[in-house]
Length: 130
Image 1 (cartoon, rainbow, N blue to C red):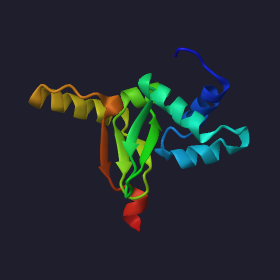
Image 2: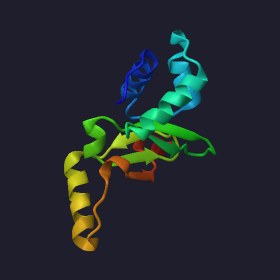
Image 3: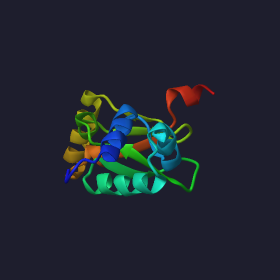
Image 4: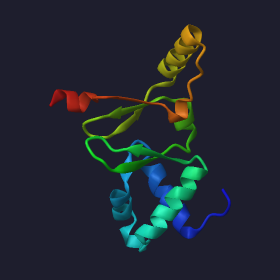
């Protein structure tokens, strides 16, 4: 990180607290509303965090909008992501299952998967019930 402003630190704290979610800019603005950070500062900081590989820009399900997901934790680097196309929630595939899937793909195709940037989409158990 080049330098950490108070705004960037707050934004990182919010993203880390919501590491299992893909958040729209509007949701991020709402989460930091009490700190009086302008939307332009949020966009600017998200862009910088994306360049640093700490945030990933992803399309929001059932929308033309873009969301942001925090991928800076070790948890994100070591797991594949499962994203529900109905509610938008992101889950981490447990390590043994991630390792087994990555190894199976490598053995069968020679392809090396980047787990931090891999998202499998589908429907989560909660949404499946409804």
